Image 1 (cartoon, chains in turn orange, red):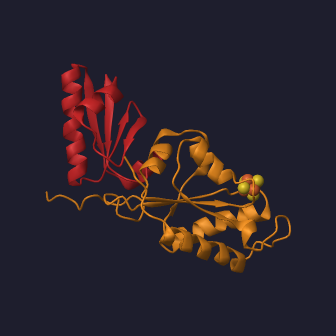
Image 2 (tube, chains in turn red, blue):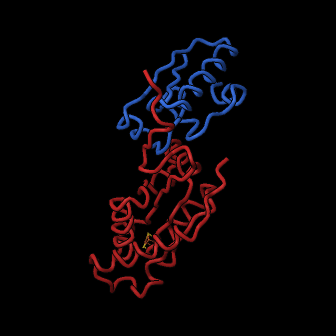
Length: 139
Length: 77
Ligand code: SF4
């Protein structure tokens, strides 16, 4: 049987050129946390990367943590200045990622309706951050 | 008996990882079985987002690269 292309993407990007983009929203309970979650899912649907499980990083689930370490690019989407997504990645030893914070985009915590428009603003900022970032050095 | 699972859909790197893992296990002289997990849904169940990957007794040890047999030995033990 002929070889399959190297490698079959599990996330939607080519896994062999180091360009797999993983997205970690904080998915917090507040409105801005929910918006971060929606933005992560929107970016996934539109093919800019693949939302992955931040809780798995927190729990040091091996397959999830090792996947993050091997990602070509990472985007953390934090709802507010508590920066839970970024901190969860950092505490797990994962650095060198792009970040977007929802409250920095004119959306105050506790006062921002979860709408498609707000989700779009965060997603666009995420795309911008990813485009501006270099590939991570994945050992 | 060590269960060594190669997660990947059959690309050249997956094959290289299989060979390197077999070599490592043989050199260690352990009893082992190798299973190739090619189904993407099953691979995703491990939380793995890029292949090839290696799981030892169900625990993922390597994702997205092919370590040397020497490195794999340390991960298997
Ligand atoms: S960053 Fe803010 S919104 Fe997100 S989980 Fe943390 S506290 Fe909640």
